[in-house]
Amino acid sequence: MLLRFPYDRYLTMKTFALLDHDADAGAALRLAPAPAHAGPQDDEGGKGGDGRGGTETGTATKTRPKTKRPNLYRVLLLNDDYTPMEFVVLVLQDVFNKSREEAMQIMLHVHQKGVGECGVYPYEVAETKVTRVMDTARKNQHPLQCVMEKQ
Image (cartoon, rainbow, N blue to C red; front, side):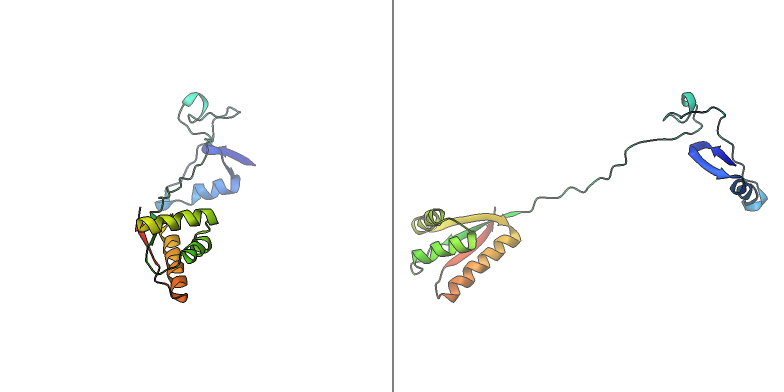
C-alpha cells in the first residue's frame, strides 16, 4: 500500500513505520498524509494556494560564464633595403594565406611607407605568424623584420 505525502513523495507502510520509530531522543517523527482531494496541485503549494505543498514544475537553466573576447594583435612587416620584393610576396602568400594581388599590395605598401599590416589575430596566432616569417627570412638569409602590436 502506498501513502501519498506532500510534495509528491510516496512512502510504503514499511518506510512510514521506520520513520515513525527512528527519531532522535525518543521523539517520534510524524508525517501528515496529503489532503484527501484528488487531482493535480497548482504551483502555489496546493489547492487554492493553501501553502501545504504541491508539485512544482519549471525549467532548470544552467548559467554559462560569459567568455571574454581575446585581445587582438596586428602583425606588421617592416621595410628594409635588402630583402627582395618577390621574397616578401612569397612570405605573405605562404604565412598569411594572401592571394598574389593582396600580397603585392601589402608589399608595395611596406616598400613605400616603411611598415604594413599583414593581418589581425589573437595573441597566439599572431606570435606564431611572426615566428614563421622571421624563421623563413633567417633560413633564406634575409633581414626581413616582422613584429606584432596590440590593437
